[in-house]
Image 1: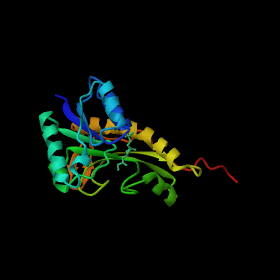
Image 2 (image 1 turned 60 degrees about the vertical axis):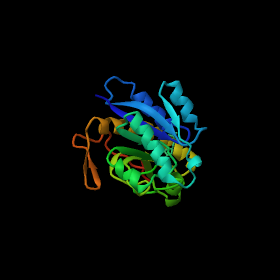
Image 3 (image 1 turned 90 degrees about the horizontal axis):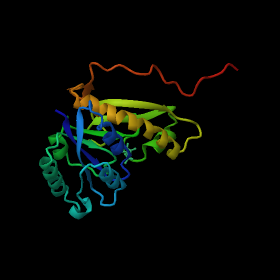
Image 4 (image 1 turned 120 degrees about the vertical axis):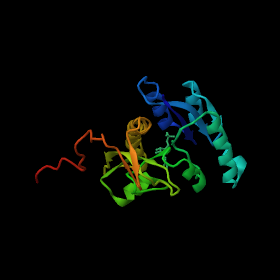
Length: 220
Ligand code: GAR
């Protein structure tokens, strides 16, 4: 039986689209049961509808500061669609600790940095300010702390001297579109187990050996 997944978005939805595409494969262990947006004008809603995935808008603005009421509406929708797993994909609203704990081990997020480095806003600009030579993206289980939680999968990219936040974001986004579907396949297929704060994937082996940046360095 395929696990029933809800994708939560707030905007563009390119990671959502990657997940929807992957889930079309007959051997994929999850199906996208619905896409929920907290923003009525999220472009991702159109993409999802065009792919034949049911969409729902629960406008967070309508609930003001009442996060519990927003999440009650969210939970009702998830129950109605018998959702078993949640994927946050550019979902830009903080969830309460209570909601997060209820979904612990069943809710994933993707963040465009190699966590625990650079959580929060503008992680690509943070990476450039820190001068790191390698950055990337992380898929992790969600815990109450923002952009933290047991790490399921990471993908790395080199950072160039002349990168801007935009060029780095584009390079990282391409990796996001690879690792989010792979991480969902792993989790939905029962390929991971949570051990305290850590996520272990027993059958996991690195696909590519090593990434060194900058490189290669020629002799002087
Ligand atoms: C993605 O880069 C995602 O990693 C990031 O928002 C973007 C959404 O793009 N999420 C976060 O920063 C979460 N802290 P998308 O709507 O095209 O998937």
